[in-house]
Image (cartoon, rainbow, N blue to C red; front, top):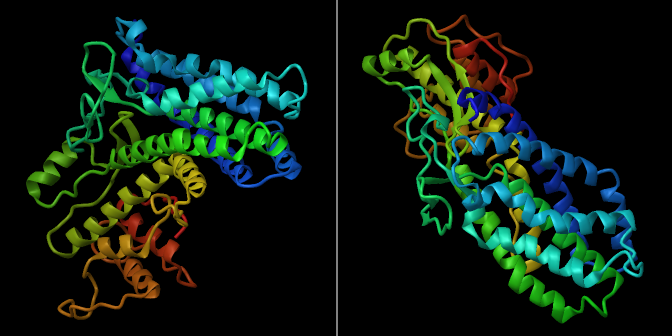
Length: 414
């Protein structure tokens, strides 16, 4: 039996591998789906060029992730044969072998080394098996692997359901929870293989991958694949929990006993980016307002940071890449990865507004930056933040957050 403390120590390594491989796959899927929309040898040449040197890193990253997740997910597991999530690599291994052969032979479908019917069967089976069955997206729940600190709330993953949908599972009798960390990278790899094969075959042999065949592929396969990606992405994002803001003496006492935590927790991983907030004595009034703003900004930045490092933007990118195949519109900006003026303005509230009673407020980015910079120089929490010139929104956010930690905070793109 594994030591559960070691499992928790491995969490960062799991997230790192997860993020790296999903980022790589998200970029590759974007290229493959573009090729699906065009004909001709140019598409295949582009495909081969984009794949050079990338097949091995994907396989290596997936193998590393699988080894770490194997230790984490098999902790106290008693019925391995029923725990389908542990066997996602078995679902895709034949398709991966076919894919390697395709790449090594530059997608020359005339070579006897490539059996088109076999690649069709294996690539379709892998992508659709993972898209259509919940059993590959859940694992047994162990209380000791959930995040605990006494201040974060709602950090226990919901049992026996994925989002609001009950889990349709053949797994063990233990309570089960959704966990995307092993299945999502494998699913993205299955999508890459399936779309890459169909795109290459459509370009090389339109008499085999006919328009009618391609239309069936879109209707029967891409629709459920996109549905699984979109629904799962929504569940993952909803599972990124930030802590409540302490607002009174009782709250601050409990918050202090928990270690003054801030940041974000991924409830489905039992892990996140949690930092310890250090402040001076917080009085009522202005100090409390300055703390509230800095604390919420800190948590928002950590949430954006975790989202990026965990590779979740790759899922969003893959969704946007698949939508045009079905005639659907795409989103231009990944709002979960970038900061918006609306988010920052909502955190600032009415502080430092000359007349908050006005029902219509026309707020400019310069106004937001100016108010943030003033927040960084108000109150009695930390020494005033230096005023940078020229004034920028990024430096103003960093100034406001510095009231809490005095540490540099990574600020994502605005």
